[in-house]
Length: 410
Image (cartoon, rainbow, N blue to C red; front, top):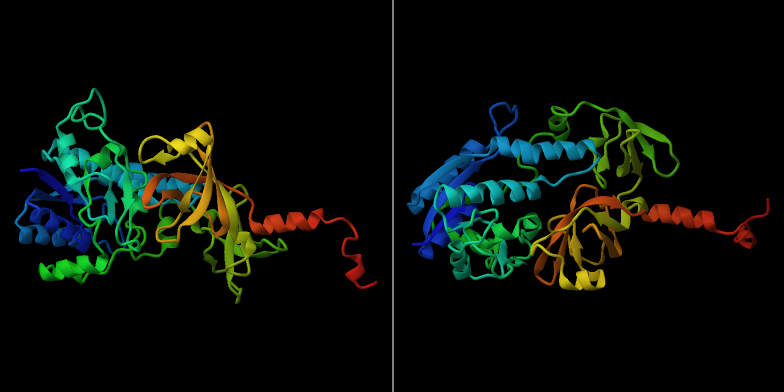
């Protein structure tokens, strides 16, 4: 019988994924990953409760249950990265990095090498271009070298496709996963909607996971106040809030890393709402503007670091023409925006958007799509000028006296 190791988190999605795998006749095992050590935390951590919930699901399904700890790996590969990015003035996405390193590197190795798995499965809303049969065929192939130690040869390239429920689609979070890992992975929920998954859970008697609040935000921060949390790990770096329009000092802050572009800046003594539009790490300045849709928040050009392509190589059209039309997003669930990619020699890309996008942010991932295929992603490392900067430049370029006839005579 083909063995599938399913990552179980104690939530409804992974629980239904394990159930569907068992119904398909697979030899299913459930594994709960503990990634964050809650012993020293002052806030509420739900990892122990989640582990109990996952165990109860496995008991109900009559499948083996295991727990593994990746606390050290998570600290080294995810949390340290998280802190380093904030110190550089960027806003990281730890969920994408966690999937890349923890679930689809350490966990998949454990499943294959320690539990004798033929494949792994997760509760992500995503699909791939391969059928289940292909997953298991490749498991016993061999190749000279590679991540999974002589177990398979490179076969057809596997594409990452959006889930049927486009609102819940999670390919965004999988956009840095390796091709090797993708070949070994099943996504049982890929063709289902969230509502239907909840219905399956209800019929299966999974009430204890069905009623849980869906996890949102950054897993290791939980319900705690972000500023208080981050200041436990980074020293305060006081600086000023400065108006982008008249360069007036509006107030002070405890560190530029506490703010990301587009968020409201709660400035003491200011009754009106101000929003973060830019940061200068060298001076500690956080620039703010007096409206949520200020032109200083909109840009239409960005550059990524070297792009991780899901198929390991850039699309043939991009290689041939050095340019390619596709779609882009840098936040989960934001509408896809048409764009033009320009490939650089070092594997980075310039991304030119067909319309300006609000609050493009350094450190976030630009994720690219062609139709329903997720092509891959690259971290945003450079931003083009804002609309406000371009407007100011055009004003300075106006010839002297251009509007003299309409100006009042002094």
